[in-house]
Image (cartoon, rainbow, N blue to C red):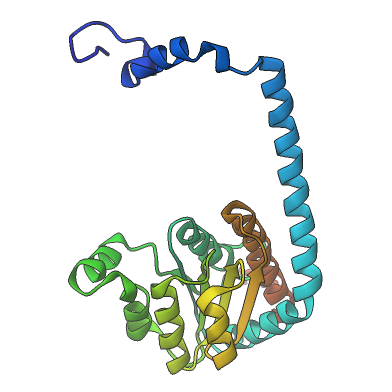
Length: 241
């Protein structure tokens, strides 16, 4: 690898030639290594303690509703319902994990689930041809049926396409389950209007802590749903005779 003037570059230094200059000009501002390590440890312990406290609070506050929501989800799965999950950014990967948890569980029966963020062609086509606010609602309009489940994730609770998806899901008599952060944003309004059957809000201003707690919430929902469905039937041994 070489720089633009043809001289050899050493590793990634060649990508950031200004770093040498910065370090030279600001050498007196570089913190002591021991102090930096101490601060990093303190910060890590603080963040770990924060998410533990937050998860405990959410668990205590939401235990009854989590059980009720999982019971409804189990009933819909038992009747042939399917789960559709959606979200933006980091929440889009969480939405994929929600679908994976139900569709390909490490134990228990596999349940029909699909993440609406997974098909790049569909998402980009709808974004380009219609508008980003409909990338999930249009898919639910095509695929969703009464008895299905819509699970949407938003750290702010204000994502327009998540709101539109829940409105479409409610029109189709789907069970609507929302996960939000902060004060719940627009999803709180949907909950008050009855558009959202269940809303779980993580009361934090940190996107990182919100997503960590939401991960716990949807895994608990998966486990409670599996429990409500009962043990998977044991396959009968093949009778060669």
